[in-house]
Length: 551
Figure 1 (cartoon, rainbow, N blue to C red):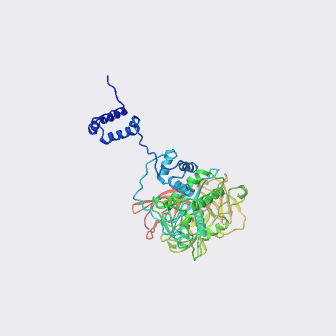
Figure 2: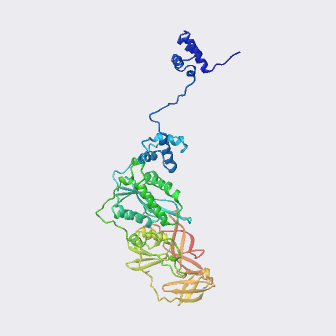
Figure 3: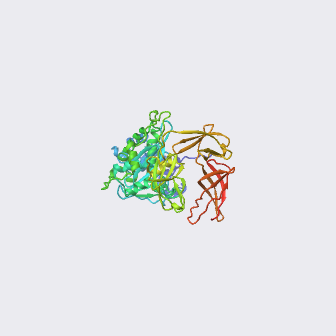
């Protein structure tokens, strides 16, 4: 019968053989171990007897760098109280609170051992990133706009943020309802009022910060104007390069993790702003920054002192004097029933291009090459657009600009407008009933007024108020009686066709509608006009196709 010996029994037999006089080399070769192992077995047998031949653990019984139990408990308690703190922040806080010196790797192993973080392999840093930093504070600010802040009613609001590149000091954290030109620039101006004027600002290519991508041609926006008038160098990132403004993107991550995800949504815009102010104070003065070797941003920041006063555009200064932000919506601030809401009107000076085709806020105004290089004044609100030359009104068009377009014009330098160039009138409206003939004309004071052939045979009311006249139909529909139309179609020049859209005057005669208008082609050496063409309708959008010839 075969008996299998345990490891301890085999070691015991080897020791007995050596004690009986067998050479150690021969015993080691027979048992397949080294001579050093046989000598170790002999030493353990002499010291402890047969129990000394049992397997021993390899654990170190004492280590001078082993973390004490109370220190490990303190690390775990800090982590449980602040779930967003990583090993490096915990090392800083342990030293700050007087618990002693621990290393980052030790804290990481403690967190893994107590299952407070999930172990993961370290991500290797990309070597193609170029890390840079301005040498002194107030040399460069990074500005951006972030979202993901909500009020209790579900309204999403924006947050304008700014950070000093050298110190990581948060100079702007302003909540706004809409991140348009004026609120963003107002937050920028308020920060410069407190901390001084920086030498440079770095932003992305949003239309709030730059107008170089505005169509049909680049234009200076309000933010660029503020920078230019205060001697600030405005720098832009390359398109699709968010890592260039990595410092402020990291600020957004901290803002989201430490405030918005924890305490949102907020009861009101004022409550959100109060929370932002408290968070910004803690971020600047009580939160160490890892890229600053755990220093506080406030310890590296110093405001700038400029010998020149801060220059603020007039429209922004006026709006800031009235109120920094619109108050919360309430019925008290709304107009009463039947009360008219005043229209916003702006004025802007423009030089007529050689083609005679002027663009104002996205609306085309055709003035003709005869007025090329002339300086005209544009008066526009949500209803009408007037063109003035040397103070005299030379053209009036229906305005296609809304509140957003007017605000964009104001941010680009347009000034608040004065009274309308139209005559005020007596304040008395006159209404006359007429029957529209088969060609869409109605007789008035010995003249024919075009009201549209689609109203042929109907009884309409012509309402005249000052210099305006409107046509009131039986279904209370009102339309202007100025014979204007919006023409869209295509233009063919030298065999090449492109889309075209412009305003024109129309006339009706002999049972058909005819169009006569000059066509803008953006080429000064072309004198192209439409020949009279037949159209299908006389509504606000008339689609035609024309082949032009040079006259």
